[in-house]
Every structure is written in C-alpha cells, then in structure tokens.
Length: 137
Image (cartoon, rainbow, N blue to C red; front, side, top):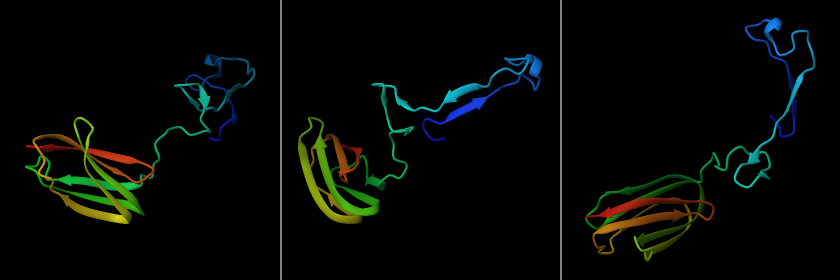
C-alpha cells in the first residue's frame, strides 16, 4: 500500500448487514495508510522496517570456536566491497585489524597468541557491521 492512500471500507459480522456497524448502509469508514517511527514520532518515508532485506554480507563464519588460540574466518559478500576485519578484547582494545580491498569472498587465519578469554570479531563493509564472539580456551 502506498503511504497516504485512503482506504474506504464497510464491514459485516457473519455476512449480515443487520449485525454491521451501520445496519441501513451508512457512510464508509476511512483509513489513511501511514507508517511512523514510534521512537520519536517522525515520519520515516513509508519504510516499515529499518532492516535492509538484501544484506551485503551474505555469510560470516568463524571456526573453530571455541579455539585454543588460532582460528579461521570466512566472509562471503553479495557484492565486492572493502572490508575492515577487527578483533577486540573484552575491554574494547583492538588486538588485530586487517583491511581487505574489493573482496567478494575472503578467508584468513588469525593466530596472535591470544590469551584465554572472550573476544569480538567484527567485519565492517562500510554499510553494515557483523560481529561474532570468539572464545579462547
């Protein structure tokens, strides 16, 4: 339905006009189609969700996870784009970063003699960021 389209309707209960809102006909009800952002009451251009149905990063996997130190990551994109791969520790410190240019798919192994703990591996393509937890045992 386009935004601002006016819909007119009448309804009947169990198919009988005698049980409808207006038993003798009456005026049509009107409804105007609107989509609003509930958080700040600002019109959002008719988009019903903020999630793009065509994700730019088709798949992103980390293995083995949990790991004893070294692990591999594999990224497959729907379109070739620049990637920023970042590994951060639980305090937010960057442990590893790699910039990959014009990648449709990319695979690499990270072995930085990591201490035991929880890490966050993120892949940023400039339009979206995917994050996975990596556990080092």
